[in-house]
Length: 357
Length: 159
Image (cartoon, rainbow over all chains, first blue to last red; front, side):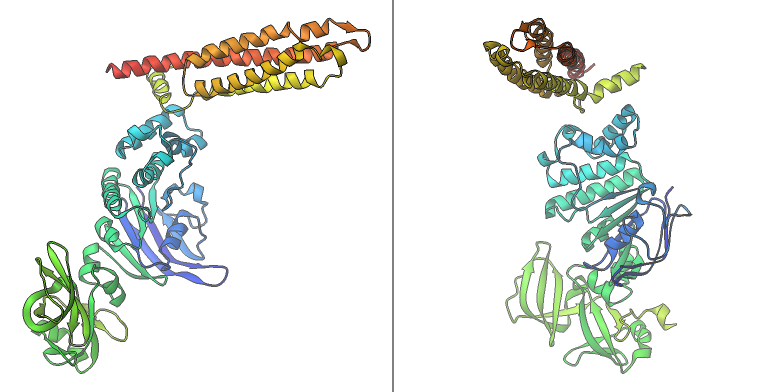
């Protein structure tokens, strides 16, 4: 059992720079939480505070109901996997994995069993006698994970573990982490700036910006119902298209194009009539055929789909259309929006049914 | 030791270095250094300036090199280095009777006793300690190497 709770956690450095603002999170036992956000948003700082590598300026951290805010890192029973692996170059894989247990003076036979079990899980059995320099990046990262597994910690903390790997290896190691989580059923916190990692790995995602939590939810919730403009722009690849539009009775008008609204959407935006809002449309929610005219600038064929970059009126737009397309510059493609997201221009929050009521 | 623990100890040897005999071999080098530092700094004038001291210096160099190589070899469970360590250990005992014993029993007109009782006891202790370390390293290293070899052979045979 390992439940983690962060209550009103702040991080203020000595130079008065505040890196994390009022961070609240409940992590359930066995959950894989991904902290995602751009560089400098406070996600690694939050992870380091959980690990005990940074002091918590204010607020509380609970592990299984016990306040561990002031507990030293070594007594927190958490294991951290770093981006740069942090392996000892002069030790073999076996020795690296056994090192923390050796320091604790555990029985060598017990250590041996744990190391072999972890190596089996991570498919490292044949590499145990090698030095880290003889391993690939992915294997080194697996060794770093193995070192955590043998400790059998309550919580695993991953700080951008895949950032040093090439794209192919990143994908493979990501799947291994997912399998590892399923196999161990352990509570894990994972920091990344890569939204693909976040969407594929997480049970829940914590999206952060400028030290503030923007939204906490399942990957689908963040993708389908982003809480604000930041989440909408950060989650999804290619990113969401945004247009400044004025709300009319049954249309949204951008000056040089207008989009019809359904009755439901009209009702949702009733309070905004005559005002400007931000319309968001994901590239994959744009389909070929419809009342809008996309003027093509260029297109990228991805095999199953084609990314079409162009203009809708004066606004830039990217559409992800099904199939292999070969448009030329200045071709006009009729399109329509299958799903739209509306954001308040002043607050940048999403306009939703519950907000309206 | 239970059968399971014995099995685990053997299996562990596949992944950990044979550190005890390797360190014993290094300790043997240390005792040898203490021995020759004591012998060579003695001011006994003409007695040491013989072919014997030249041979002693050469042997010390060979001993240290061979002992270090054996240490590295035995660390990786290479059994043949145990034989070399056995020879080196025996050699340390033989050396007691070549230089220290002869110097201890010699009285020169100019300097009197070449090696006093205190120094003699000291250098003999160093050589004995060095020899014991070599022999212990050879025995422990040899036994472990053969255990591992048999264990791996059994594994390969699928037992």
